[in-house]
Length: 123
Length: 123
DNA sequence: GGGGCCGGTATCCAGTCGGTAACCACCCTG
DNA sequence: CAGGGTGGTTACCGACTGGATACCGGCCCC
Image (cartoon, rainbow over all chains, first blue to last red; front, side, top):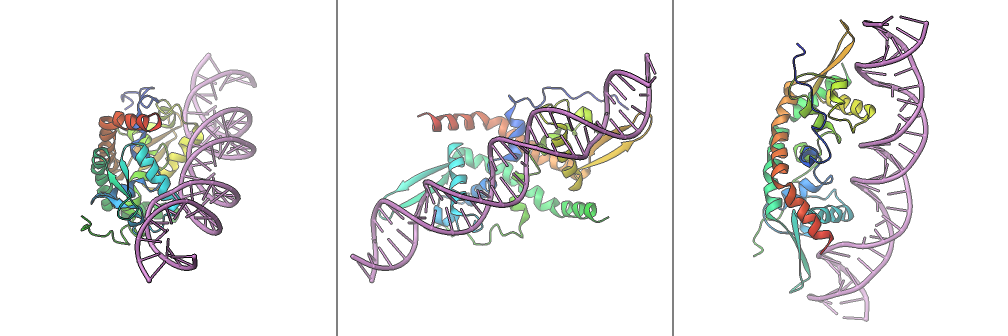
């Protein structure tokens, strides 16, 4: 009954980033920004439409972080009107796949989670 | 060139949880705890071995959250020695799939991310 | 009955995160 | 020249998270 292998002590050492990154990806809005960019480049004010609960400061923070990590590019067009376009890099686009998997999971199991939460608070 | 569809305003309304949940899953350590439980039930002190950078308080917090949301069960065995075992529920086990996908992504692209970050801070 | 181990709590504290509000430089239009 | 839209920045602030440290009751073994 207790013949299971013991867990190794270095399973999640700090040198194993892939253990920690995935489900703490970016900040609160990073994943949603990526999904908004899925259909092509978008301008700052375009992104503000679906993300209307995000203030410009926070959206800027998110975009800066995604740019820093190589998920999006930021290109400034001077003519004919000043405009800034954000677009996915190949790296950012590759992130859409696990993101979609996670979203599919949530779509399928979300109410189970809600049920469990309700059962736990009011039994 | 600007023939893209505009982004809908209600794409990520608060009633669409599956948009926000996935990549902000649980707290900082929740995903790691799930992976530790993949091989079968584990006791509190067993979990502390691979998660040696997590203090007991924080580990307790994480486990309580996972229990509340129906990802793990907590069972107390009185005999022969007092012991507490944490195990995955089917819901928790189903979460391992997208989690593995995300981890695979990270394993494949982690150094690209590091490169991008380095290129961004020191050019 | 003393010292372990097991499974936590209690307390405190620093840092981060997200949010509000205000402001700003630039360019175009009228 | 005034006004408005674009794409932000800055200052401030409260709430929450995560971490350090210490402590604790129950049970077993010696």
